Every structure is written in structure tokens, then in C-alpha cells.
Image (cartoon, rainbow, N blue to C red):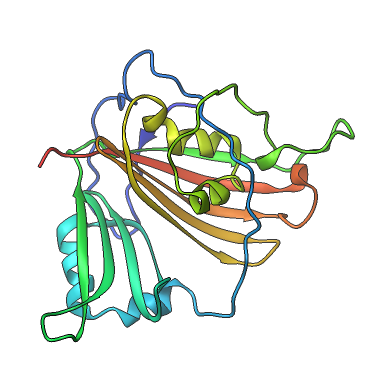
Length: 242
């Protein structure tokens, strides 16, 4: 259950290490709301590599320069303009989000939002859920795990709550832990690619003090919840004061 330093990426990027991440405080709560799973719809559109290539080389380079080396990322068409790309890059030095906009001449441009991290604060935990036999005939809970006791509702967008509800309870708890422990949620987003049975997923939740980023793969999702399996990496970094 401990957070671990982020492993060195395959690109050979230098890894920053330090002591255990204070998430956030010695007696911090680790429980969090377990959300109801929303039905995930699917459309016939290209995946993240295609939309990443739709960004100009200059925008891609700016993102990597500001927050890289890249740890994980996604790109897709923007919900307000399905012909234009946007991208989210989680790097060793920060989080960058490129959003389509227009320039002073009314032409297409990209607005870049960057959340810098405290050096050496990046940590990760791996969440693995293996298929198991159901021991009773009671309906499976959302995410297939026991629901922790939690009496408060975090101010997350409904779409984000519904997405999180499809993930194992431990991944939900880790992604929301800073906000359970006093951080203020500012923004978040998610992306998934696959089908009813197998999914690759990405999401981030950014607050004033912490950013969490969850990514990984789920399979066996079209059957009973206990038959599903997941392997997710929950990453977390402290936001640098600007």
C-alpha cells in the first residue's frame, strides 16, 4: 500500500528520488468516496498517437521542455471542437495541458497550462486487481471492491466521478487522497481507449498542493465485476509554489 518512487522510464530519463512522500501528513486519511460507475461510451475515432501527431512540433516540444522527461501522456480531439487536438503530458517536472484556442488574428493556436512540481516529489504506487471467484450471490459493488466508509462528497465533476467509478476502489482512493486530506481540487480530466472488455485508461486530478495521475489497463470488463482484472499506476507529485 506504500507509495514508491517512480521507476526510470524506458527513455533513459534521469529519475529523481527522495524519502517517502508525505501524502499529506502523518495521520492522513487514506479512505475516499467510491463512486458509481458511469457507462463508458465508445466512438470510432483514432487513438492518442494520431491526435498527438496533429499537434504542431512546436507545441509538443514546448510541453516536453516545460515538464519533461515524459512519464505518461494522452492526446485526443477536444470536446468543444472535435476536429482539433488537445493533449495532457505528465512529466517528471510538471503537468502540461495543451488546449485549442485562437490567436489574435483568429487563427488556430494552442493554449498551454503548466503545473510545476517540487523537485524529487514524484512517487507512484501500483494497483493490481486479479480476477476472483464470487463468494456470494450479492450484487458486486462498483469497482468490485469493498466500499470504505466516507461521509463527504468531493467536488469533482460528474463525468470524472463516473469515470473513476469504473476503477478499483484502491485506485479511486489514491487518486482522491490529497482532497480527502485538505487539498482543494482545481481541475481534472480523463481519457480511455478500447472496448467493452479491454480498456487503456488515463486521468489526472490537480489541486493547489498535489497532482495525481492514474494510468493502466483493465481486461475482462464485460463480464461480472469479480472477473475483471486491472493493473494501474497511481502517480503523485507536489505542486511547486509559483
